[in-house]
Amino acid sequence: MHKSSVLPYSRDRENDKGRDEVQVTVIGTGYVGLVTAIGLAENGHEVICVDLNAERMEQLTKGIPPITEQGIEEALQANAARMTFTTVYPESDLYLVAVGTPERADGSCDLTAVEAVVAQISRLNPEANVVLKSTVPPGTTERLQQSYPELRFAMVPEFLREGTALADNRAPSRLVIGTRDHMLAERLETLFLTTAPVVQVDPTTAELTKYAANSFLAVKISFINEIARLADAVGADVAEVAHGIGLDPRIGPAFLRAGAGYGGSCFPKDIAALTALAKTYETPLHVIEGADKTNEAQLDYVLQKIRPVKGQRIALLGLAFKPGTDDLRDAPALRLAERLEALGVHITGYDPAAKTLLDQKPTLDEAIAEADAAVIMTEWDEMKQLEPERLQRLMRTPRLIDGRNCWAYADRPHGVEYEGIGRYNQTFTNNQIR
Ligand code: UGA
Image (tube, rainbow, N blue to C red):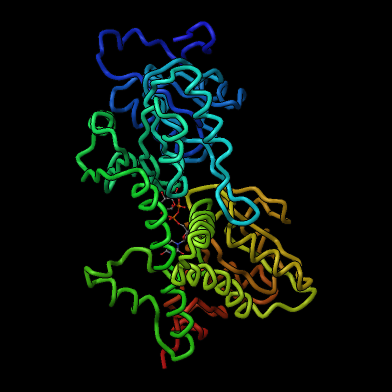
């Protein structure tokens, strides 16, 4: 290993002398790379994290995480002895690639970073084991294998959720290992050290498994959002419908929360990449494309409920794409803000974590002051616990549109003009059930 070119180790590793665990290099310290690296260090392995962002590496060396993630600071400190952060690739036997695969203008997946990393690895060690953690379109790993026949590839997709990534990493629902190399598969099983079921498949199947998982979850959300609209129309409660169907183990209760639709760095991007890829194979994905269309339409539906009038002041409560994160990528709140701004509405925003370019207020009370309507777009606890009295006292008109069906006061007398998504019994002030 070219230790001379590596930044100093983040912490003293004396205590770990004599361990026989593996040394792994993780490339990319975004949320997948960093959480995976921490997990490997927790399993006792020595992990070298590489990222071209020197400032980020310096911060990480000091134990400061670049992402907001529950428990990450403590985990970095606890595993500091086994983690090194550097901008220079070490020569290694095992590399995990977790660099970004952003969306191109046509929806397809940009593999520039992955390809550059693999080229660099092959220069350092032409016979290295290369494990792709980045989400890549089906066929990518096999193609790389053909270009670099001496490298040994595996594709191990990531199923972590932002906000609960460390916990997900410690207790995964499954470990999917996509490789044609049985020795590498066995090695990876030991490396990730999990009691979860292991699914050993070829790389293309692993790649498709990742996209299929995210697409299925997105379909589930869009499905319940359509049912929510119908619930509004016929006079039914979508939350009860979700409960009623979710008890069937074939359906399951998760991801049936109706609301303003999904966002984030994964569902929209992965659906775009998969549908773009499917088109090249002339295999249209009608159901998945439908989920995407429904997700767009769901924002129009929320807009319809707001009934915005030019010159009005509307407060968006929650801007991050979901609670527990400051991530704004494809956040429904920002997409709604664009639509509202185009209608000449003045928007005030509030979020406990995310920072935007909107007229964002430091407190929720300041955001709703003199507003004509408030819209919950992220179900932070603060939004759930927003007392009706504050809405009445501070707003010009106490109107609340609950884009996440989360308001704790919705089903009690509250004296606020309240409307959820697909919850007939909450369209009436004081919850008068017909
Ligand atoms: C998602 C997947 O859940 C992870 O398994 C996957 O690893 C990750 O993408 C990824 O590909 O990296 P994440 O984007 O962190 O994780 O967020 P989710 O918790 O899945 O939520 C996504 C969106 O769906 C949020 O905007 C959330 O508000 C919305 N959602 C979720 C609903 O509208 N209703 C629900 O019932 C659940």
